[in-house]
Image 1 (cartoon, rainbow, N blue to C red):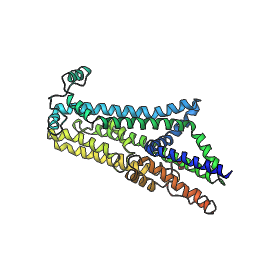
Image 2: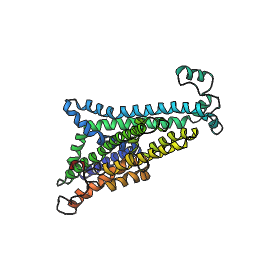
Image 3: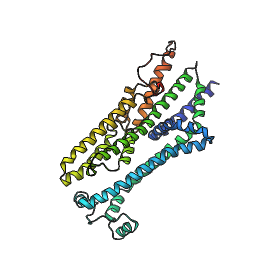
Image 4: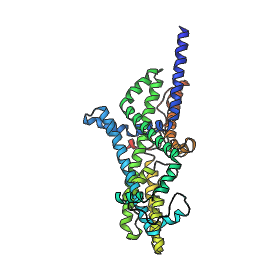
Length: 365
């Protein structure tokens, strides 16, 4: 009997090691999947009122997140291409780039961004330098493309089935309950992860709205030559960029200020740069600072301290890379919840209600 148990344990450890090995190679995709799952789970639950099947609700939840993001990024890419095309026509940047980058050919004007224009440029061989550059780096380009597509597929599939079978996974974990410690820990950490990660999604939406109003209001108040381009799009991208630690929204509004200031400098109307300075003040104070100070305490979960959470967002990418932005807050919630719920009971302490915190929450209102 003991020999059979040893064999079963060895087999289980072998399977667990194999699963861990595979999961390690997809740690980034799995981390993002958990992040997206907890960020969208409340929306998925709210669709129950429409009496929709669980699979339909999961598809609608993923579509509500992915389609707007895809449209936003695609629209941004199209606008960047069009603006660069117009910018090159005004300032002939392509000739300067051709002197420093080998695969760029100084062929004069860029082709028209139409099907006929691009087809004519291809027939004339204007794309030959670019095609040659891609052929020389085909393996790297293929590797990056396939890796991104594979990880995106993993995120979509894992998130979809977490939305569908998350309750079954929770019930399976509760089979290992011991004196209700496991149950208390899992229920607490599940609720806290949802509060923290759903708070991130709310933070993105609110900051996007604040940025759109602030940028649009700025354009109404200044001369047309000092306006920032595409305030609504820039505001939406600012909200998405708020997920990035340290630099965050600055990667949007600082280049936006530069794009607005560049024509002013070239035209010699330097007095209008005062308005660009005012835009930076508006962006830093109204969009960047005030929402961070006001919203973070309300959207940082019920137990997790806002200061530790901000450190997790800052240090996570430094330690783990890009996916550390999602992994670090998850690890922080797991660790703090364990220390707060399971560890005292394992050490023999009596459970208590805990010390009330001065940190305000959204539920306080």
